[in-house]
Length: 99
Image (cartoon, one colour):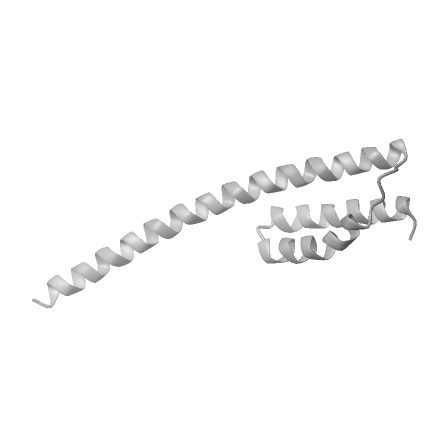
């Protein structure tokens, strides 16, 4: 696979990652990211201007995905803490109800 084909494949995989993230399928996004990683590492430093533009698109998508993942993680953490609080309250209610 030449560098142009490689970059086109990387962009395609990045869009697949973006699609998985938009569906909140984070395990699939992680799997695709892991599969994409060795391909990223095989990029050469010298690239044509069109290839550099595709690389910039990949970087922009990755940046947006990282921000989305961080937001999602924070939201899930807040939901988890709230659920733990409700669980604790239910347990306390059961404890008092048994008295």
